[in-house]
Image 1 (tube, rainbow, N blue to C red):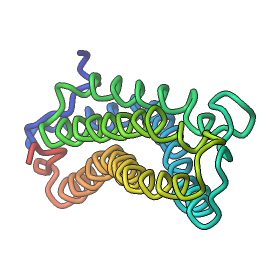
Image 2: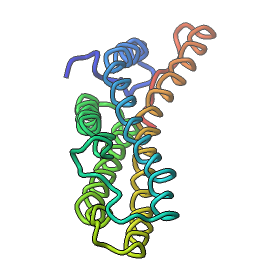
Image 3: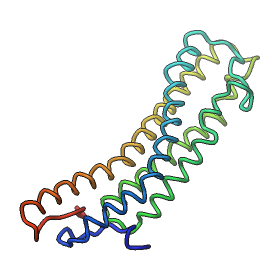
Image 4: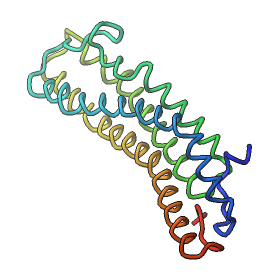
Length: 198
């Protein structure tokens, strides 16, 4: 990994601040892209939870859910946005694999949270949604399926939201530490610190 992709762990190194600024700049667009795409995913999960699913519980209509590739399918909330966003987060995590532990821990936790969200959605799409598409099912069965669907989808919402917070928080902390370094440098030109490993 090139020097600009590293964040110095030694806060006393006067080059640490410059390396941190370079890293923040180099990872800016991949982070923004990942956040935007994951926000699509979070919006889709929230819409399903508080609009589509509430309607299905209040007024169950057997077979009301359209096919997975038909117009209006919830699948379009997630394709191709979710796979691209997931790949971007993993690429970012790989690029920052030599960063201080507090950064790598956050990014790895974000990856695990996203994998959990994807696993939950695969379960819902593969095993719960078919009941909502079954026009021969009773209204009670359709309602029960919607109730069953709500809890795992809530887990997916929390997982994606957690990943977004982790994805943004390391940059926020790095910027805060740069500000502290700048203030320290103004007070004592030979001192100061940049991003620490704590």
